[in-house]
Length: 443
Image (cartoon, rainbow, N blue to C red; front, top):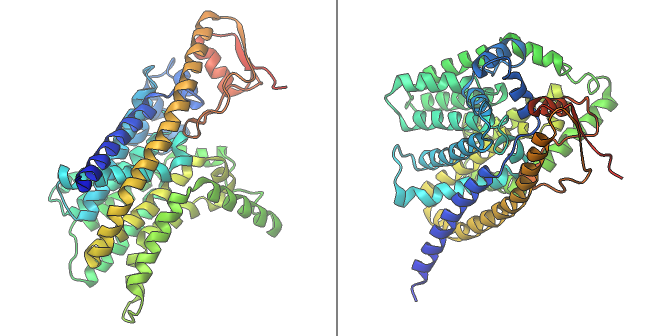
């Protein structure tokens, strides 16, 4: 019996199952929360007019590709359109990570397909507690677009592309992403640029990318909508900075939320990357500070992406999607160190690769299936709700208190609440032409 062939076939089958589970999870989604609120605005304004106004009123990122894609998808009543696009972008992001690690500018199916699926599986498992707000939510899928653009830009820089125009375009679009992610990315590129200058191997596109990224950042930060949003959300966390005791308890809350959001896969990647770095550094007395900065550049980026929310700790505590950048940069730290291991200790790398393929893929398939199973049930519930809404136009609608119990973690959502005056309740009522909507009080 050819065990090697059986193992390869099993790995390939599990890889295909991962893709299937990813797409099914992207299909079983529904409108919720801000989705209805934005759809309500479309009755008076087109999606692009809404985004243009939003740039000046609420969010400086409103003209970036993530916002544009997600808001255009919301203009049609096909909830899975945005989430499927986000899922494809997540897969492509994993492909770019593999190409970066292989120092390759071309995808080869035989060499790169399975590693790309392993990377997307690890990313999905690592982001598990944030997926409901960055992958399976139409309004929030813009974060996946940001991660895709940053990875694409970085791959082009590492691959040494000659297409300067593409570097400029992508750097501008990526620069209009979330400021914390852009600042972290800028720091990584600056560290790499000065490190390459010391090695006398400067990448000619790095200065251009850095300058254009910074320009995109200014477009967002200096937007009228950015200061308006900062003020609408209460500015700095005044309660936390009131005195030392409040600071202590708020920091404790932020740390607790941070630990809760990150799965064991995140800590596995962080620990794995650290072990590789310290393993190579042991006994090397010639290492300079700049060398350590270079080794830890992605981990530093991960920490900066969280530290950016220090002035608004309460906002970070309440919003799981803000943690996605920490996970993403931590993953890049881990995969970057794996590529170093592959070059310097290929026997250790290939041993780990051979023994981790099956467990990672199997774990991914199992978790993804559980989320599909629960999502399919919830989608059926929402379809019945929509039918109820259409049949009761102009009337007061009261939902049962336990109408939907225990949605899967990746599809956790803001449901109708008991208060008819809540903005989400009102948005749903207006979208379906109801007089009002609320949920019974749970007893």
